[in-house]
Length: 300
Image (cartoon, rainbow, N blue to C red):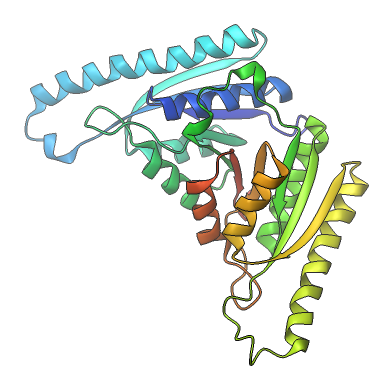
């Protein structure tokens, strides 16, 4: 990709959570020159099939609300950066599937969405939708917590990233994106490796095993450090003992980072972490956006 990110998709349900995702998407699009797509999905309800006229009336009302929701975001984009191209779409369907399919058909580079939204027949619960998108999308997802909804677009920073690694293929793809973004946005990277000894008995774990785990961490950190240095990106690295999710969340707080960049899947086994469950825990608990990169994502 010549611009690293050529297009960003913003799903919206007009909730505060969706607004938080939209603000970060707009800030990222403005910094990268990406085209913006705004999508609102009216959920189809199978139990309405027998009440066609009434259902159509309800759907029409929901679609009017959805049109207002996408136009609200589109107006935000235009008022912030008039040079950005904006496309708006309203459609019916299963929300997470519609988001994923739109991203695939339009060759979207990044999906940016809030981690929580509204519930009810006329609204999409972005919490569950976001999790389903994270599990199934082949596109990186910028998951934005609602705690950032008061941040103005002009105040959103991308100065420092936390880039966890476990030396897996998934972490390597995430590193490609994290370093690429850092180079484009002139950001600094902090990489961290967690030596998870929770499954080991201190009495029975041989020193050789602990040393091997730490050496794996050193190798993983060195690999990311070399890649970042070659790309001209400033980087620090640390090996920490503890639960991976806890290490990531604590490191993000201590480093006061603006975004966490991590893979959605990694390794399993002693000394390695399964980024699927770790990523979900981080997304649920983080106070900063989490840029989640699937193994299937194309390297920038």
